[in-house]
Image (cartoon, rainbow, N blue to C red):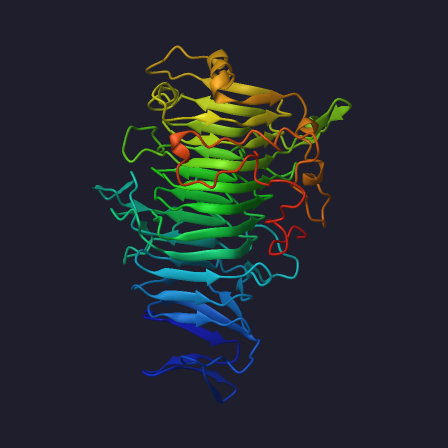
Length: 476
């Protein structure tokens, strides 16, 4: 059946589209759900499927299901009221795709967040596919020979091009995600072709992404393919693969972000907190991946102190706090990276050597703290055009006084003990007295123009700063 609209089905009825309003049929009764009306307090499940080609609003007094991949198309806007719950139907790989030119307006509040989650009574990662935002901002990807347009991963594209992203509009606007939780999402369509918890493809900086938690993702928590979107207050909680993955020319700014890992859970591909490529081939295509992150707190799987460590008990597939590779020129400032097998890995093994971007000042790493990593630094040389760099060069660059970085021996040295909260309790990411994160934040580098200047490092100022509490859920 060809779908020209999204159909919202009651489990016992169907929705018919009328010229003046939408109507929901429920056991023979028609409930007016047109503009200015709600659904009469109905709390039964409504099912969304196919394509939404005209603007609709999801009401907080309903629970909505995603059946299969649901596309917002034709310039339509999907508005979601604060407090609305949307579930992915069990075993249907439900997902939500906002196509180019369309918008999502999901503006929750700190006390009434919007929740995307599993419908299962005992949920697990991968119960549904996830959320994909596609825009018309620049990317270095290409599709069918057309440069600047990419096909998003996950098998979501169709004959109408609903899975394509990219364009020339730096300020493109895909809408708003604010105070939103995304739980148990992620779908492995093919190896290296997955749907993440939240995927961005060519999303422009007219879009607002603020206060978003992705928990128990079945691949990356957040992944950006090109685009210019700026994001603040992100939380990646116990995902499977990478926390923050940047590709294909992403050049946005991200400030105040937290990543936390389950020591026992990692991906067969090797899990990192940060993974960054210019593209899969490490080419010199433009725009180059040049995202800028500041005030990030990464809590890896290793807990260590002078009295011992759990390093022998963690999943052996954990890799790096940061793997910067394939000609990426990502930059990171004022951040904390705790407890990974490797801290900072500059990987020049494929394509244009990544360390060339250090020499030209495009790849910057300043005022950061790495602590409790088994190995702080690593380098992989290019086989085709070696630069002569080694792991020693990475260490020397990190330790340049002008960069203001420091490396500490144990994860306990960061004084973030509350971040290792036991299951079922809310972590506390506040730095304790004596933490190196309480000071040291600097915003003098020109790359940090447009960021909010603060004097601390990491995502949280002190014990009075609880931006991550209330709207989130760590008790999953």
